[in-house]
Image (cartoon, rainbow, N blue to C red; front, top):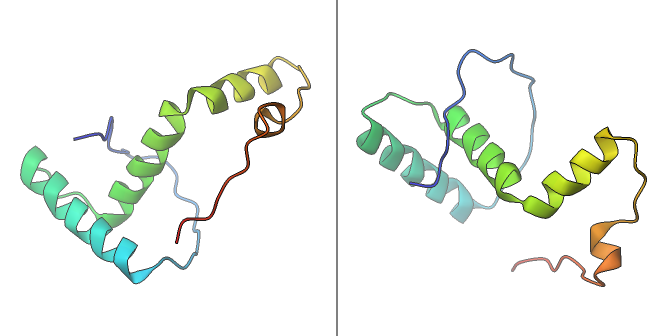
Length: 90
């Protein structure tokens, strides 16, 4: 299981978004997987939050960029520096 932590008692901020049906089904299945493997009754919402946090924590270039901003360093976009563009997934 890739999730590093499950959120506990953190203030929630309401967000709204639309996702593809296939992604919604996968999230429901992953929620069941987490529940079965941890023995915890975790909500779909908590699984989504944990997935996002795990993704962001594992993105080393993002962490480096964020650290640079926190230290007051202005840098060009990492994507621009490396001539990469995000490609939409179909």
